[in-house]
Image 1 (cartoon, rainbow, N blue to C red):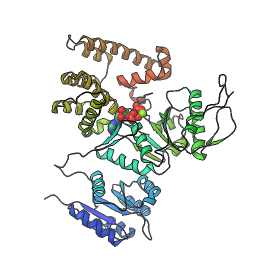
Image 2 (image 1 turned 135 degrees about the vertical axis):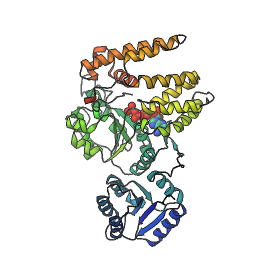
Image 3 (image 1 turned 45 degrees about the vertical axis):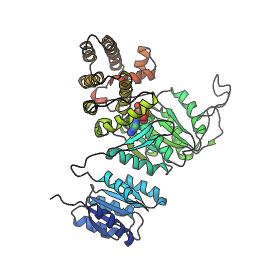
Length: 476
Ligand SMILES: Nc1ncnc2c1ncn2[C@@H]1O[C@H](COP(=O)(O)OP(=O)(O)OP(=O)(O)O)[C@@H](O)[C@H]1O
Ligand SMILES: [Mg+2]
């Protein structure tokens, strides 16, 4: 007989303990209770460790935050869900940063408790069907979360949305950092105000500075008229600083100043301007490495990472792929005015196995092609090719794979050969410039943005030693 899972509830209100006991026992949990922090801690010391702890934040004597710290010192793997009131949001953020798994806001109903249990406790074997949460985004698109990791991110988005602190969103290219930023904005009290994005990798330093902070007339040759920057235009709203890891050092200092004091001055002006902008930052590079290499200011990092969201790559949440496919198909077919295409188990399986180095973006592009070409076999063949060329992804292999394709598919073959040659030239130039993508773009006479896109498209990776530092870029 499998054992029942144990839940410990720590709360000073007897009515709350009774309520939790009733709800949890309905789901066959073994429920233990403690009416203060000290009692809860001694229960953890005694063991065995419960599968989950619900911990009230506000209790007389030792409060929830202290109890959390002490319990996690005893058992660092302890899973704790904070129970709080709406007004405690800032403290809940602190608790999540100190290792709490999730939170519940009083008063809550059974379905809200169920969502938390679903996110925090491994499903019993046989009950693995994922229930997905989908939300429409203002301005188009949608956000889907089906795995525990993504539902946790959604729950954290809800938490940080209304606390005006910067959020650092980390993850590989195409994992959904921007849509998470949009979700934070539209869940927050700023939702009727502007949401803007500045890509720090797509502009040279001086242009980036005027884009962010604006300029006064006469600030530089050609500046005939004053122009406000994004910080002014976005007042009371949310500004996403994308590819923050690429921001030049002198601008990092200026940004730090705005984050600290909410003040800055336009280029060519001494007058200081006060703004109220919520800053979100995203990057796909390893910021710790950049700090070590002194290309990223440590003090700015600590300002920005008041809260960090780590978005996992798609290959680490493959269980989500079938749901993403279904939702993409129904929305894209509507957008393109086409009937949805069937998706056979074979098709879904092939998609679930593919490596998707470009993550959800790549999956979306693949679905667009499938919808237009409407040929399941071709789509599956494309995925097989992706697997074949994945490791090592050599241009010769890509070309050979394309050349070996059915000769009736001349277009595919020619495209494969062209791509192979292009990829070889880019890889060679990157090696030659020590992975300086700006220099490589100049040598090949393409824009920096095009270079970043090609590197991503072909999945060109730097040598292992520098792999983290030079992770894929995108200058969309
Ligand atoms: N959870 C998700 N649900 C639905 N669509 C998603 C999800 N995650 C990503 N996408 C889609 O994938 C594409 C890429 O997402 P997004 O632009 O947010 O990625 P990113 O992490 O910012 O990438 P980059 O680092 O390259 O800028 C978008 O079309 C987005 O709608
Ligand atoms: Mg992005």
